[in-house]
Length: 150
Ligand SMILES: CC(C)(COP(=O)(O)OP(=O)(O)OC[C@H]1O[C@@H](n2cnc3c(N)ncnc32)[C@H](O)[C@@H]1OP(=O)(O)O)[C@@H](O)C(=O)NCCC(=O)NCCS
Image (cartoon, rainbow, N blue to C red; front, side):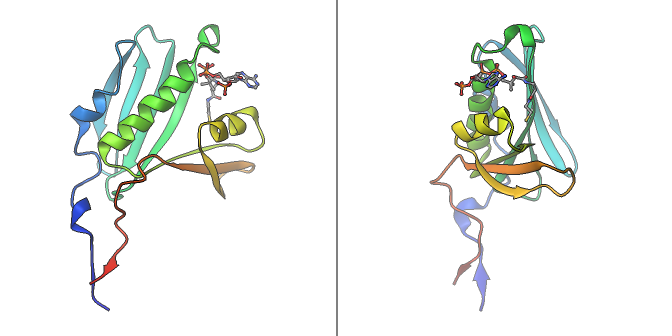
């Protein structure tokens, strides 16, 4: 059967970097790095008290990945970690993604922390024991690139 890709998603994930950067508030600075296979936005709290990253594969038009979330122990429990999640998910939507993914050590409080933020267990990582990929739909209205019958 002949298949066509939905024209509504005929753009490259990450084209809208300028819009994504508007998700940051004045507490944070950022750096965009367009790589060959993956591209990324690094986010740092202005005084270096927290940082996080969002990245995506240049050949995947649907998914962003969140990692490197870290808040200085002196500044924890003030909502900075939660804000960095929300900022990066907002960026993911601006970049054109449907789904946000991350991995975590299984059965830890962080595993529960991500579940409280809407992430669901996806599959066990084979690279490292007791770690698991989680994912969350951040833009349910986004069309998927699954080929549809003509
Ligand atoms: C995870 C981390 C980024 C959270 O940052 P933060 O700014 O303290 O986060 P917030 O203030 O937004 O949220 C604090 C939450 O963590 C929970 N929490 C903090 N320490 C906890 C602990 N030791 N055990 C259980 N829950 C804990 C609080 O109950 C709160 O949960 P809630 O908002 O769902 O009620 C920070 O703890 C950190 O940098 N940890 C080390 C690096 C790390 O583990 N990164 C994640 C890799 S997957």
